Length: 283
Length: 264
Image 1 (cartoon, rainbow over the protein chains, first blue to last red):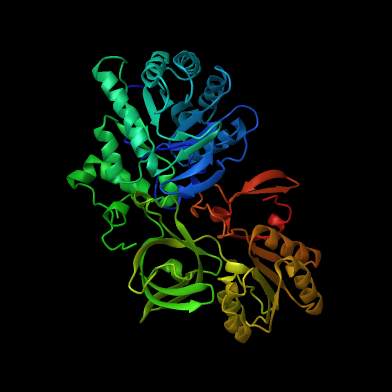
Image 2: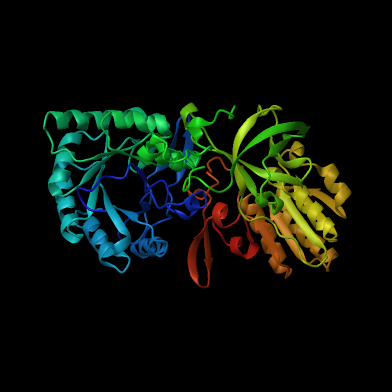
């Protein structure tokens, strides 16, 4: 996927779905980028983030420990053999680490299956965003789409987004997860308003020309077609599904069909199992 | 369903019957016929998707207690839910399932030992019935934290050659006793919390018997059941190195040797 191409309307959050084999049981993944990562330097931990508890509208969880490079190459190979495109997420403790990881994955034999690279910059300041993205830009193919993952609760969201674009980001992911201390987050449908506030702030800043607007991906609280449309109305161009897939993996295809203009126009037959159109469900 | 939309085991079920069974309510669900019901096995489970819009961030997971496929009367599925769960007759719900790999039965009618603890014993009555249908004499060892959690012991007594009730810490010891008393026992099955099935697996391996265990404990609070969240992962180590086993995707029924030394 090249910078400037039309952004796909639906993405899958890399931290929430660390093994796409589970999703493939419920439908084809040809219309989405399969998440790989977050890829970290050194030895990765268990792929999945530990969940500490659940509550009304969300789950309290650790940051995903991430995959090491060897495991990430395996996942990319899995995508390549099935002709699937991958969204590689990278995270680092130094400005150069994400660039090194992204560069090695993009230059490898399976690099052709990398559709985009997402760099986790939640909690970073604007200078750090600029440095990291610029390094990743240097290490990856020239036109490859780079996404900067920022938190909607970041103190200077617009400044960070501006710096990320200056560093080479082609899209910004606004994450609604609420930080609960070092390495711990609250995610789920209850974070939808947080995510929308971040998207709204960026949309307003774009109108005021305070940052060179690039497409915004809303990640947080999207759990069905109406919640996806709500955040698109605020100014996002795409949505990212995460923990909503834990509750119901078929939400992915429901949102894909719900946001697909062909499905809306009636040229595609809508599926009967969409969660937001289940008249028979009484629970 | 769209051409490339959600495929697989998504369907709607209707509660047609509910009866109390100790700490559980056993529900019969009428479901649309499908080839995967005819091949369903004990140890497989159903996922009832959560409704994030109403605050349910996670789905509900339920063991299959029985499946009946009848071309005249339709397909009926039994599940056990906690008593008073609010699943009344006529209740309609979306289901994803049957998911997972269940317990297989031996090709020859060899004696079998079935061990289980608490709510994980829900599939065992069906397993014992299938073993009996194959001609296998079955010995059952059960434990539970609460006596009401012994699931359909009366039915098990009718089906099995013997049923022994014990405490969870003694399951491995009692299993060893049964294996010593029944030296022709050809296979061991276990379902329960991970530490419990590991205990039974150690006893079976020590006795030189093949063992199949359910490595998924539905009593754990956070599970997606569809292989996405990774909360059920087991760290499996062997001579080839360490790897992660995801029971809800690769199991839940796995060879007992895989859970012998799993730290979680």
